[in-house]
Length: 615
Image (cartoon, helix red, strand yellow):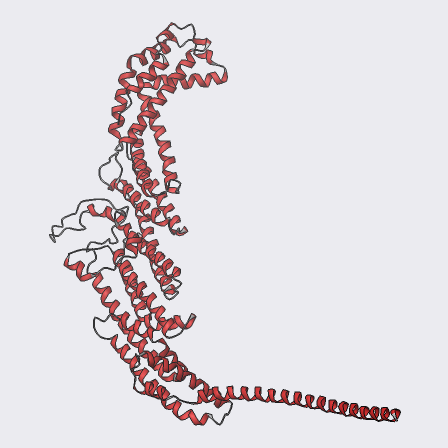
């Protein structure tokens, strides 16, 4: 009985376990099904969200807000909200173009509204920009103000360029036509008024370096003077204050106001007017180029072409006027200063990275350089063809032609140091050669060698002094005249010593030459000659030195140079007397009793110092 019960229980438990196992299998299958359903639902959710996002963006882009319509239609273009809505409208226009390209059917729902808003926006923008351009034409208008206003709304032109190129081109052409006329009119008037305040006395073809400095001649037939006195001709070759035009303060200083200058009866040299005119061009040109690049969104050659379409007529007028003026200009310093004004302005525009005027600068230099070289060559020829017989009374003082050369050469050399030009250096070298030849020709007119040397030294010293004020010490001109001055000064010292001390100097030179060959005994019988030399020097040297000093100081216009020559002469005299001592100390002459009458060399040096000038 117990066994039977146990079996029943075992069978029941087995059945229960089998049922439990079956239930577990069913639960596992259901879990897998739920997992699959979850993954599928998650994927559908993501797809729906992605579609919703794209559809939402599409709907947003397709919808034309009421705010946009009202602002574009009613708000003034200068309002910030108009500019903001214009940006949004531009996005919708671009989006509509993209949908149209893809052949999206929804595009047709908004195309009509977008087109109408675009037409309205274009109309309002065109009217605004046209009015601004027309405002340039009003007399006395500071056109920088409307330009700055246009730059604040540069997106307007960008919008037109992207959506209505015909209108954009119309406005650009209108701007070009307006500004071209404005600049031409302004600069034509300004240039004409500037010429009214130029110096009336200007150099002509006869105002050359080698032309004789003669007083005016009254013609009895006409009762009129010929060429006026050349008192002012030297100013043609002198820089004076004219170089200030190249100083930073004046180079970029305010431009001249002609009517103000006329009221004050002020007059200016050509280079000052040239600087003012071209600084006005530089200032306006740089500003215009930057405006064009910014507002019309151009760069490179396109920007240069647009700039030239505006400024081309004005630049052409400048070049024509300059060519006319230069054809009759003989003021070489004015032309050279103009060249260097342009070189500096060219550097300024390069530093600002504005290439708009580069070709114009080159065109101006191509006019100025040949004219400067021609005038310089005319001056060279004028000196080459001078006739000393026609240059008035001979005088040992510095000649007016060499003074002109010195002033002119120092001017050109000092200016040329900033922007060296080899052609200029070559022409200055030719001019220097002709001046040196001229000085020699003039010196040859003096009958005595002493006067010839005085003339040469005075002229070389004057030219050197003027050159050293402006040129560097190592310039070719300074170096060349230093060598000439030293050579002629040494020759002059020998010349002035030869008269009072020539006998002693000749004896010393003769003795030293014989000593080198060991033949000094040839002079042992010259006791009388030696005695005369010793006693003659002792008795007359003080008076001779005093006379020599006075003569030198009267002969040279530069006291410093005269002092230097006296010191050189006294030094040379001591050297010769030292040589005299040395010769008489040789065995050949030791028995001469007159040796005791020789002046002590140290004593002579002390005494000589008393005769040196104190100034």
